[in-house]
Length: 446
Ligand code: SF4
View 1 (cartoon, rainbow, N blue to C red):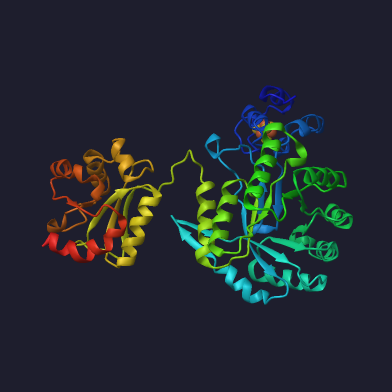
View 2: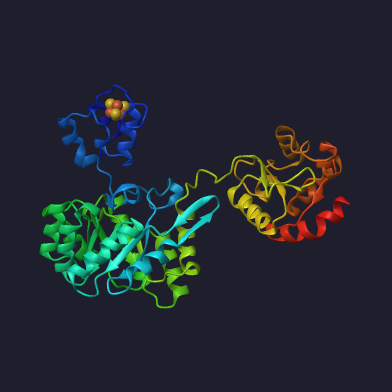
């Protein structure tokens, strides 16, 4: 039977020292009870209590670590089926497939370039799946070392036979690769993973994975990744959904591991969409064969969107942002501090090369129309933002003509009265800004 927060609290030291990262023992006990923390995160818990609590309080899905250092990948340890219930904790690794028979250094350069900035965050490919098509352990080792030297990314080592993977497990254990024998791990590979403490992929349908995970666990493998193998996209989603349900809702331990899937559709655009679907539906690692930015970026964008905390609006600091070194005659563009809105405006302004000030009004991270409808982006709030930031004082008198988004043209009259300056109505969409700034602004300010 599941332990309650109070049951767990009784077994803790009750000193409220905060060393577990939570201010009190009771708060920590509640986290353990809701499977958001493991009892061994308290460094002061006694061995007896650890034993008593360990099995009962272990998170329903194991945290699996691939790679080492700053670039290590941690997957699993998820606690909910739907992100609105809480949030998803560990974003999946997005891995590009490399073959040990190709020029791996050239490929590494291509993978390193799959790095983008979106709404103020860096998003990038962070894992490599190295396939041993040569069947030669030496070649696999050489390619793995080259990739690691160039990228430092966690490695998924894949092969049809266990021999090259056992060799790699022995010789590259310090890199903590994920070992993946297609069709399921052989006995020697299970023994290598157990001996070296490495994560291991078990492959097959749910029933086979269930049995294989129990066997590997009994043999001493602690960290595993479940893989449905070469199945159609609907089958892969079904596999991942049922495995997650079994772990989280039925506490079925053999399914309590993250998953790995390969997006296998040949058409690159379809493969990109397939991978997005896997990101949304519980994948721990998604392996791609496509490596062009136009196909990889949507997958990274999907990961970023799904793994944002849905209860925390994505926002930028409210205030004035100076772009392209504006002087006292530069336009003042007014928008909200919702990240997506702000960065859309920013990217259009940057591409126009026109010097501009952007005033991001504090709307608690909501977009223009949502904020206006919630009374967070009306004349009063915008005028208050002018006052707080001295936005108008930064401009020559003849250029004190703030530009508001076309979507809230309705507030222009009231804002004009409140602020005492001319208010201009800009385009409805950020994409209209470059044309507006180049063709209209000068005419409007005279
Ligand atoms: S580290 Fe242990 S003793 Fe300290 S507050 Fe956390 S649970 Fe309590």
